[in-house]
Length: 271
Image (cartoon, rainbow, N blue to C red; front, side):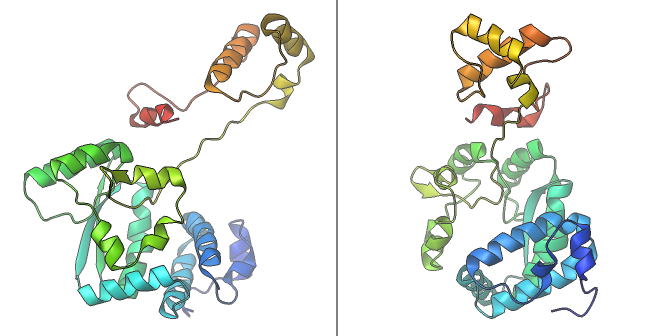
Protein backbone atom coordinates (compact mmCIF):
# COMPACT_ATOMS: atom_id res chain seq x y z
CA UNK A 1 0.00 0.00 0.00
CA UNK A 2 1.13 3.55 -0.65
CA UNK A 3 2.17 5.53 2.39
CA UNK A 4 1.00 8.82 0.83
CA UNK A 5 -2.52 10.12 1.43
CA UNK A 6 -3.51 6.93 3.26
CA UNK A 7 -7.28 6.48 3.40
CA UNK A 8 -8.90 6.53 6.83
CA UNK A 9 -12.12 4.66 7.75
CA UNK A 10 -13.97 7.95 8.05
CA UNK A 11 -12.88 8.86 4.51
CA UNK A 12 -14.60 5.77 3.13
CA UNK A 13 -17.73 6.50 5.14
CA UNK A 14 -17.81 10.07 3.82
CA UNK A 15 -18.40 8.80 0.29
CA UNK A 16 -20.81 6.03 1.25
CA UNK A 17 -18.45 3.05 1.10
CA UNK A 18 -17.75 0.28 3.58
CA UNK A 19 -14.45 1.07 5.40
CA UNK A 20 -13.62 -2.65 5.19
CA UNK A 21 -12.90 -2.13 1.46
CA UNK A 22 -9.62 -0.53 2.45
CA UNK A 23 -8.52 -3.34 4.71
CA UNK A 24 -6.46 -6.34 3.62
CA UNK A 25 -6.06 -7.79 0.16
CA UNK A 26 -8.80 -8.27 -2.39
CA UNK A 27 -8.81 -12.00 -3.03
CA UNK A 28 -10.38 -13.55 -6.07
CA UNK A 29 -11.10 -12.10 -9.46
CA UNK A 30 -14.82 -11.46 -8.91
CA UNK A 31 -14.17 -9.72 -5.59
CA UNK A 32 -11.49 -7.59 -7.24
CA UNK A 33 -13.76 -6.54 -10.11
CA UNK A 34 -16.75 -5.85 -7.87
CA UNK A 35 -14.85 -3.81 -5.30
CA UNK A 36 -12.82 -1.98 -7.93
CA UNK A 37 -16.01 -0.93 -9.68
CA UNK A 38 -17.37 0.55 -6.47
CA UNK A 39 -14.10 2.31 -5.72
CA UNK A 40 -13.77 3.78 -9.22
CA UNK A 41 -17.34 5.04 -9.11
CA UNK A 42 -16.60 6.88 -5.90
CA UNK A 43 -13.15 8.15 -6.87
CA UNK A 44 -14.23 11.56 -8.12
CA UNK A 45 -16.10 12.30 -4.91
CA UNK A 46 -13.59 10.65 -2.62
CA UNK A 47 -10.62 12.83 -3.51
CA UNK A 48 -6.97 12.11 -4.30
CA UNK A 49 -6.37 9.75 -1.37
CA UNK A 50 -8.32 7.06 -3.21
CA UNK A 51 -6.11 7.36 -6.25
CA UNK A 52 -2.85 6.82 -4.41
CA UNK A 53 -4.16 4.10 -2.09
CA UNK A 54 -6.22 1.99 -4.46
CA UNK A 55 -3.80 2.23 -7.37
CA UNK A 56 -1.14 0.83 -5.10
CA UNK A 57 -3.51 -1.94 -3.96
CA UNK A 58 -4.42 -2.83 -7.55
CA UNK A 59 -0.76 -2.86 -8.57
CA UNK A 60 0.08 -5.17 -5.70
CA UNK A 61 -2.84 -7.44 -6.56
CA UNK A 62 -1.87 -7.68 -10.23
CA UNK A 63 1.79 -8.29 -9.50
CA UNK A 64 0.84 -11.18 -7.22
CA UNK A 65 -1.19 -12.78 -9.98
CA UNK A 66 -4.51 -12.66 -8.13
CA UNK A 67 -6.27 -11.63 -11.35
CA UNK A 68 -5.02 -13.90 -14.19
CA UNK A 69 -6.43 -11.74 -16.99
CA UNK A 70 -5.01 -8.52 -15.56
CA UNK A 71 -1.66 -10.20 -14.99
CA UNK A 72 -1.56 -11.51 -18.58
CA UNK A 73 -2.35 -8.05 -19.95
CA UNK A 74 0.32 -6.44 -17.80
CA UNK A 75 2.98 -8.98 -18.77
CA UNK A 76 2.12 -8.69 -22.47
CA UNK A 77 2.32 -4.89 -22.32
CA UNK A 78 5.70 -5.05 -20.64
CA UNK A 79 7.05 -7.35 -23.37
CA UNK A 80 5.79 -5.05 -26.14
CA UNK A 81 7.60 -2.13 -24.57
CA UNK A 82 5.31 0.50 -26.11
CA UNK A 83 6.22 3.90 -24.71
CA UNK A 84 2.82 5.51 -25.18
CA UNK A 85 -0.68 4.69 -26.38
CA UNK A 86 -2.93 7.51 -27.52
CA UNK A 87 -6.68 7.09 -27.28
CA UNK A 88 -9.86 9.09 -27.64
CA UNK A 89 -12.25 9.66 -24.78
CA UNK A 90 -15.51 11.50 -24.33
CA UNK A 91 -14.69 14.91 -22.92
CA UNK A 92 -15.55 15.77 -19.35
CA UNK A 93 -16.10 13.19 -16.63
CA UNK A 94 -15.49 10.17 -18.90
CA UNK A 95 -11.99 11.38 -19.70
CA UNK A 96 -11.12 11.73 -16.02
CA UNK A 97 -10.90 7.95 -15.68
CA UNK A 98 -8.01 7.66 -18.13
CA UNK A 99 -6.42 10.89 -16.93
CA UNK A 100 -6.62 10.36 -13.20
CA UNK A 101 -7.04 6.65 -12.58
CA UNK A 102 -6.65 4.11 -15.38
CA UNK A 103 -3.86 5.95 -17.20
CA UNK A 104 -1.60 6.48 -14.17
CA UNK A 105 -2.31 2.95 -12.95
CA UNK A 106 -1.47 1.42 -16.36
CA UNK A 107 1.80 3.35 -16.42
CA UNK A 108 2.61 2.15 -12.91
CA UNK A 109 1.96 -1.45 -13.89
CA UNK A 110 3.48 -1.50 -17.39
CA UNK A 111 5.56 1.63 -17.93
CA UNK A 112 3.31 2.69 -20.82
CA UNK A 113 1.87 6.19 -20.89
CA UNK A 114 -1.77 6.74 -21.89
CA UNK A 115 -2.38 9.89 -23.91
CA UNK A 116 -5.98 11.14 -23.94
CA UNK A 117 -7.59 13.10 -26.76
CA UNK A 118 -10.94 14.47 -25.62
CA UNK A 119 -13.97 15.20 -27.79
CA UNK A 120 -17.74 15.51 -27.27
CA UNK A 121 -19.47 12.18 -27.82
CA UNK A 122 -20.80 12.88 -31.36
CA UNK A 123 -17.34 14.02 -32.49
CA UNK A 124 -15.59 10.80 -31.46
CA UNK A 125 -16.83 9.17 -34.66
CA UNK A 126 -15.73 11.97 -36.98
CA UNK A 127 -12.36 12.21 -35.21
CA UNK A 128 -11.69 8.52 -35.85
CA UNK A 129 -12.64 8.77 -39.53
CA UNK A 130 -10.66 11.99 -40.03
CA UNK A 131 -7.53 10.45 -38.50
CA UNK A 132 -7.89 7.43 -40.79
CA UNK A 133 -8.36 9.47 -43.96
CA UNK A 134 -5.33 11.59 -43.06
CA UNK A 135 -3.31 8.38 -42.55
CA UNK A 136 -2.34 9.79 -39.16
CA UNK A 137 -0.62 7.72 -36.51
CA UNK A 138 -1.69 10.13 -33.79
CA UNK A 139 -4.30 7.80 -32.28
CA UNK A 140 -3.94 4.10 -31.43
CA UNK A 141 -7.21 3.28 -29.68
CA UNK A 142 -10.68 4.67 -30.33
CA UNK A 143 -13.60 4.93 -27.97
CA UNK A 144 -16.65 4.15 -30.06
CA UNK A 145 -20.33 3.46 -29.84
CA UNK A 146 -21.35 -0.04 -31.02
CA UNK A 147 -23.63 1.51 -33.65
CA UNK A 148 -20.51 2.87 -35.37
CA UNK A 149 -18.64 -0.43 -35.57
CA UNK A 150 -19.95 -1.59 -38.97
CA UNK A 151 -19.07 1.72 -40.59
CA UNK A 152 -15.67 2.00 -38.92
CA UNK A 153 -14.87 -1.62 -39.78
CA UNK A 154 -15.93 -1.39 -43.43
CA UNK A 155 -13.96 1.83 -43.86
CA UNK A 156 -10.86 0.16 -42.42
CA UNK A 157 -10.67 2.65 -39.55
CA UNK A 158 -10.47 -0.15 -36.97
CA UNK A 159 -9.07 -3.67 -37.15
CA UNK A 160 -10.44 -6.88 -35.60
CA UNK A 161 -8.76 -8.10 -32.44
CA UNK A 162 -9.49 -11.84 -32.58
CA UNK A 163 -5.85 -12.76 -33.22
CA UNK A 164 -4.79 -10.97 -30.04
CA UNK A 165 -7.64 -12.48 -28.03
CA UNK A 166 -6.31 -15.89 -29.06
CA UNK A 167 -2.65 -15.01 -28.63
CA UNK A 168 -3.06 -13.65 -25.12
CA UNK A 169 -5.73 -16.19 -24.12
CA UNK A 170 -8.28 -13.49 -23.33
CA UNK A 171 -11.33 -15.60 -24.20
CA UNK A 172 -12.17 -15.84 -20.51
CA UNK A 173 -12.63 -12.09 -20.43
CA UNK A 174 -15.50 -12.32 -22.88
CA UNK A 175 -17.38 -14.68 -20.56
CA UNK A 176 -17.66 -11.84 -18.05
CA UNK A 177 -19.84 -9.88 -20.48
CA UNK A 178 -23.59 -10.16 -20.76
CA UNK A 179 -24.50 -12.04 -23.98
CA UNK A 180 -25.99 -8.85 -25.43
CA UNK A 181 -22.66 -7.04 -25.18
CA UNK A 182 -20.73 -10.03 -26.49
CA UNK A 183 -22.91 -9.95 -29.60
CA UNK A 184 -22.50 -6.19 -30.08
CA UNK A 185 -18.70 -6.59 -30.08
CA UNK A 186 -19.10 -8.76 -33.18
CA UNK A 187 -19.50 -7.71 -36.79
CA UNK A 188 -19.11 -10.09 -39.74
CA UNK A 189 -18.08 -12.81 -37.26
CA UNK A 190 -15.12 -10.76 -36.02
CA UNK A 191 -14.49 -9.01 -32.71
CA UNK A 192 -13.74 -5.30 -32.92
CA UNK A 193 -13.31 -4.22 -29.33
CA UNK A 194 -14.23 -4.58 -25.68
CA UNK A 195 -16.98 -2.87 -23.78
CA UNK A 196 -16.09 -0.57 -20.92
CA UNK A 197 -19.54 0.99 -20.51
CA UNK A 198 -22.82 -0.90 -20.77
CA UNK A 199 -26.10 0.75 -19.92
CA UNK A 200 -29.30 -0.75 -18.59
CA UNK A 201 -32.76 0.77 -18.44
CA UNK A 202 -34.61 1.38 -15.20
CA UNK A 203 -38.30 2.22 -14.93
CA UNK A 204 -39.22 4.44 -12.01
CA UNK A 205 -42.91 4.83 -11.25
CA UNK A 206 -45.10 6.52 -8.67
CA UNK A 207 -46.75 4.04 -6.36
CA UNK A 208 -49.37 6.58 -5.36
CA UNK A 209 -50.55 6.88 -8.98
CA UNK A 210 -50.70 3.14 -9.64
CA UNK A 211 -52.44 2.68 -6.29
CA UNK A 212 -55.00 5.44 -6.86
CA UNK A 213 -58.47 3.88 -6.57
CA UNK A 214 -60.16 6.33 -8.96
CA UNK A 215 -57.48 5.84 -11.63
CA UNK A 216 -57.62 2.07 -11.26
CA UNK A 217 -61.39 2.14 -11.72
CA UNK A 218 -61.20 4.41 -14.78
CA UNK A 219 -58.45 2.29 -16.33
CA UNK A 220 -60.37 -0.95 -15.89
CA UNK A 221 -63.52 0.61 -17.33
CA UNK A 222 -61.62 1.71 -20.44
CA UNK A 223 -59.28 -1.24 -21.05
CA UNK A 224 -61.16 -4.10 -19.31
CA UNK A 225 -58.09 -5.07 -17.24
CA UNK A 226 -56.33 -3.93 -14.11
CA UNK A 227 -53.94 -0.98 -14.04
CA UNK A 228 -50.41 -2.31 -13.52
CA UNK A 229 -46.76 -1.44 -14.06
CA UNK A 230 -46.17 -1.71 -17.85
CA UNK A 231 -44.37 -4.83 -19.05
CA UNK A 232 -44.21 -4.08 -22.79
CA UNK A 233 -43.60 -0.97 -24.87
CA UNK A 234 -47.18 -0.88 -26.22
CA UNK A 235 -48.48 -1.17 -22.67
CA UNK A 236 -46.05 1.52 -21.55
CA UNK A 237 -47.37 3.90 -24.21
CA UNK A 238 -50.97 3.06 -23.44
CA UNK A 239 -50.54 3.55 -19.68
CA UNK A 240 -48.55 6.77 -20.08
CA UNK A 241 -51.23 8.19 -22.37
CA UNK A 242 -53.95 7.19 -19.91
CA UNK A 243 -52.20 8.95 -17.00
CA UNK A 244 -51.69 12.04 -19.15
CA UNK A 245 -55.36 12.07 -20.16
CA UNK A 246 -56.44 11.73 -16.56
CA UNK A 247 -53.96 14.04 -14.79
CA UNK A 248 -52.41 16.56 -17.21
CA UNK A 249 -51.30 19.31 -16.99
CA UNK A 250 -50.47 18.68 -13.33
CA UNK A 251 -48.99 15.24 -14.04
CA UNK A 252 -47.96 13.65 -17.33
CA UNK A 253 -47.70 9.94 -17.98
CA UNK A 254 -44.00 9.72 -18.71
CA UNK A 255 -40.76 11.62 -18.78
CA UNK A 256 -37.83 10.71 -21.02
CA UNK A 257 -34.26 11.93 -20.99
CA UNK A 258 -34.49 13.13 -24.57
CA UNK A 259 -34.13 16.50 -26.23
CA UNK A 260 -34.10 17.74 -29.82
CA UNK A 261 -30.62 17.14 -31.24
CA UNK A 262 -29.44 15.10 -28.26
CA UNK A 263 -26.93 12.52 -29.61
CA UNK A 264 -28.11 10.08 -26.95
CA UNK A 265 -31.59 9.82 -28.47
CA UNK A 266 -30.47 6.80 -30.53
CA UNK A 267 -30.21 4.68 -27.39
CA UNK A 268 -33.96 4.90 -26.83
CA UNK A 269 -34.48 2.79 -29.94
CA UNK A 270 -32.08 -0.03 -29.04
CA UNK A 271 -34.65 -1.97 -27.02
